[in-house]
Image (cartoon, rainbow, N blue to C red; front, side, top):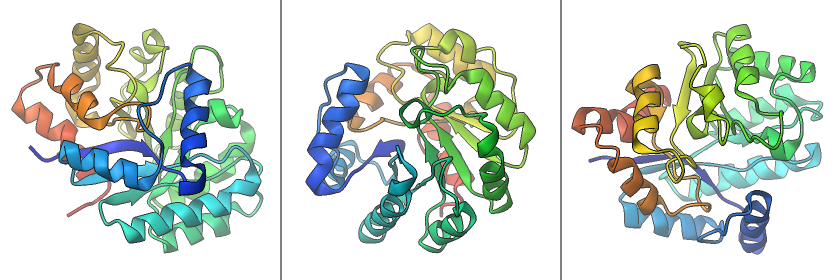
Length: 262
């Protein structure tokens, strides 16, 4: 069965170990790997994935350009990578940077609002979302850490309704540790979800309920590397026993369709 990993993080080699440790410290979870491109490729090859969505978040506006250049360079060097840009609400020249990201082949933007420490529905973000929608860019939101309110499921829904022409992916079934909220999100044509950093905790019945409620055509498989080993996440996903047709959709077809892959 063809596989795309729709959620992974990479960092430059010189900080790949430190970055992985920082992510682990943020969540109180031991990482299984450093966050280098080389380690990710090895893990994806073990899984047999054909493509992998890679990203990194800018915790300050000053990091935006360097992150985007790095992600674009890694995508050029490794054809299996599909890249998302970084952006920050305090980055002033966002229109030109979004254009630069597109010119380098990046397909959208990843926000980790809990680490970046601004609300998904912050008024300062509205012009950025409008610019992204106008450019047909896709946005991936880290979602729903119960320790904060920056990425509350209701805030993603607000943006999705305000920008119906903006394609949105809500990571972690739309609510990492706030699944009791995200399961009640309205069904919106421009909102998708990934399975990353969820199946270690969601039981089989609850995960299947999410997928049935929103529809399997709205889901992507994701590992959240380096938090989890892609092959282990695939095992957890297959244990849901959704059937071959649904598995094909979530593991490959849905992502390929949204991102217009061959």
